[in-house]
Length: 191
Image 1: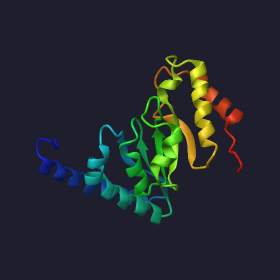
Image 2: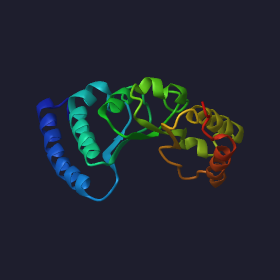
Image 3: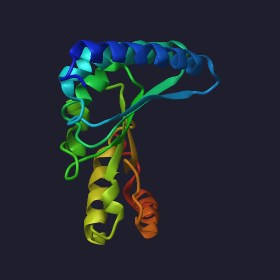
Image 4: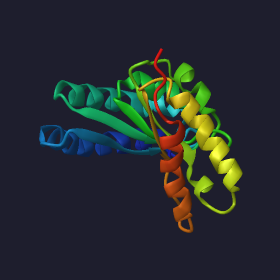
C-alpha cells in the first residue's frame, strides 16, 4: 500500500492511530498494571526508517502516558532484532518481550544489553520456540539454555522466556527441562 500511494498510506496510519489512541486512553485508565502495545514486530518487516516515520511518535507518547499512570509498558519484538532493538529501547518501554536470540534471530543474548543502549529496559526471551521441538537435540537445548542463563544471571534486567511461543509439537519435557536448568544454574551472581 505504501509503494502504491504513500499519502494514502500515511492517512490510513493516522486514522488507525486515532482509533488506537482512544483504546490506549481506556487501557491507561483501567486498573491493569502492565500494558502491551498492539504490535508484533520483527526488524525485517518494519526496519528503522518506517519505525522512525510511523511508529516512534505514537509509541513514545503511549509509553510516557503509561509510565505517568504508574504502570508498566511492553512490546512484542521477535525474529530479527538488530533493525529495531535500539529504537524500541529508546522509546521508554518497561520491557521488550519474546526476543529471539541467535542462532534463530540475528543477535546473541550476550549482545542484547550493549545493542539496546538503554539500561532501564528489561529484555525478555532467550529460548527460540523451535528449540522446544525434536529438531534440536537435547544436548543443544541444554547448551543453549545454560549459555543464556550465564548471561541473564549477571543482571536482573533479563527475564528468561520463550522467543515467541512453544510451537505445536513442542516437547513437554523441554518445558520441564527449562525449570530444571534454571534451578541448577539460574541464580543471580552476586558482585
